[in-house]
Length: 321
Figure 1 (cartoon, rainbow, N blue to C red):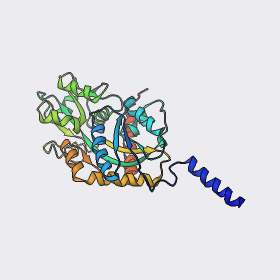
Figure 2 (figure 1 turned 60 degrees about the vertical axis):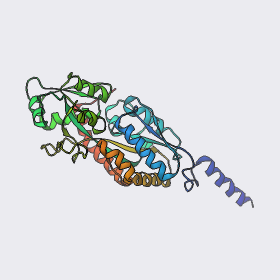
Figure 3 (figure 1 turned 180 degrees about the horizontal axis):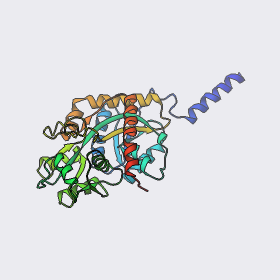
Figure 4 (figure 1 turned 30 degrees about the vertical axis):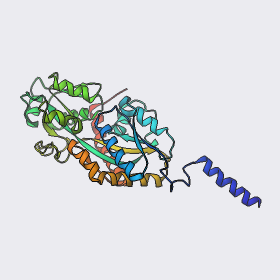
């Protein structure tokens, strides 16, 4: 009897120490939170809200989006990294989850504190210029960059996707690029709209309205295939520069220690949502490409991105202290 009593105490202790233990079959039982590390209206926020609705239908529970902007998405990532690993708090990341540790002097959390769950979507970056610019295409931009004056290229800050585009242009096409960091992609885009700079690169999700309205001219997209919503805009690969490849991608991460059963269920829910016609009809017209896949394929994607971008960070000496 004493032995059975001891076993009972041990089992009870396991449940008390790990509330998720033994409860994965019932997950989810309440509202799930998707934390976005940027303010409302950006590419990641758009993706998060559309996917959250789709996942909610798959899981039968509300999925809400909470914005926690700051420090290039580090604040939001840190919040989730320190959240309970019970499957009710997830982080919707951008590429900064890979590049922030490369360029920042210190981080409030370790990379292993967040576990990859699913790649959600990619919003290709589009190189844009003012509509009255003499730059008509990528070849014109590169030729201008090789003139004595060079190109003024606005970005959303050190280590942002536009910054990487400018560095990729510099390394792979040559020329002089005066890279001007702004506080956000919106400000960098306004600098082009107001003719303060020659060009920038921003996600298709936030530039398509201005492009279609004639307020910006798109000269190339930086992904591996043309954007369905902009079929006449060539890719950098088509223009002869396959090394200029980057997108504004969104991925889902969970706190370390979240049970694998929950991670698998969430991955399957995301995959089903991304394949649904309702979600695709809302993402694709905005130039956002749904990217359903397994947890393993997302890990491979992250490794490829890390290996590809790390040399650029080192070569450009990107630092954001």
